[in-house]
Length: 68
Image (cartoon, rainbow, N blue to C red; front, side):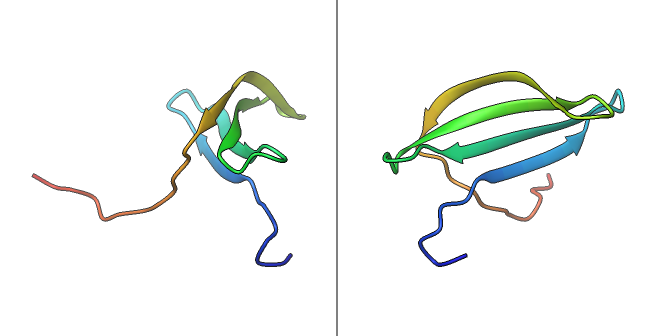
């Protein structure tokens, strides 16, 4: 991988029902501002598509939890 390699952003989690889910943001080739947002669910054998759409202006960061 090089500094110019475009990578997908990925978040995986288990919801309250115990279902494993993930959301992927995959960069569109040829367009730096657009991404495919892909929502999937694990079916014990493979990831199954739940939905997808094109989004723009994806930002990623972490921050400390805000408490009252």
